[in-house]
Length: 332
Ligand SMILES: NC(=O)c1ccc[n+]([C@@H]2O[C@H](COP(=O)([O-])OP(=O)(O)OC[C@H]3O[C@@H](n4cnc5c(N)ncnc54)[C@H](O)[C@@H]3O)[C@@H](O)[C@H]2O)c1
Image (cartoon, rainbow, N blue to C red; front, side, top):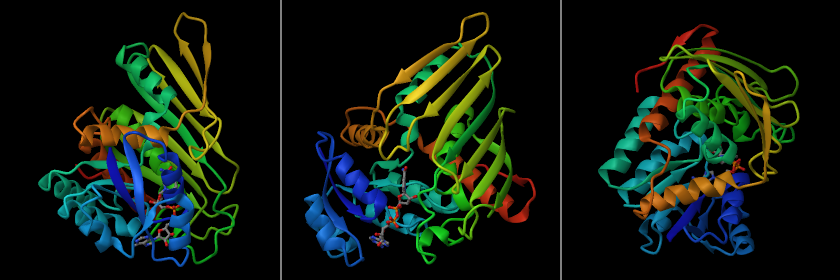
């Protein structure tokens, strides 16, 4: 079993500790956070409180670092963890630009440690079934994706919170929820080629924007139309259209507290089918798959080539949101 220290004990760090509490593959045993609540949060979660990151890196009982910190810190923290010989699981986005992502992946490979990313949506059961339908050729050639991931959890954040800072969270909702859709699109369509993105502050006082629309063209020729809104109640939906049929997955709730999914499949010449999926923790499934490969017991279904392709596309999204123009995606 991996023994992890978690850096960042905010919303998501605590969610991960609780989600993994009875896992047989990975357990969070220690926490670090500069905030005054760190010691009491660790006591409440039943984990050791460490004074700083260096203490975790020097601790031989810790073999894994989980990063739940603000986005600008990810690259340096991944590389420091790798240099200390620790496996790294980094929350999304892996990094904010391709050069940092390439340096981070290279550091993990150089030090022979495993790298994982918090793209748990890949591990949702309905997404796995959609992938199986595609692999079996049931949907034919993939033509287009339409997807939305919206929520209103940030409306009450203090105005000086890092999530409202355009350096930490460029393009408004993109690093919060849009990135999950971008990663899913990369997982189905491969590397992206160019992006046209609009972000506006329309329905809240989230000053770096609350409403995003992105059209991403992929090298395959297919497009993904991605939308993410931070000023409307939760919605999660992904539709994938193919030359033989289409499938749409609707999420009942945010992955924080999953209540299941509904998948509709329409294949040419067949009656439309609708299937309900019971709740399952994709956050846990992602971390357990990461642990399984780190322990030499399985394969982590998130190739490094996809990690890099997602960040290459993310960087083009940021550029297009700023310029209002179509921006090319760098080759990753
Ligand atoms: N996978 C998902 O679905 C999902 C959901 C929510 C958040 N996230 C990601 O998790 C990360 C954290 O987001 P959050 O919502 O928990 O933010 P948050 O603001 O609630 O928590 C961040 C915490 O990091 C701490 N921190 C800052 N610098 C630190 C450092 N150098 N060392 C240790 N701790 C430090 C802060 O004090 C804070 O407590 C982000 O990357 C975010 O995108 C992922």
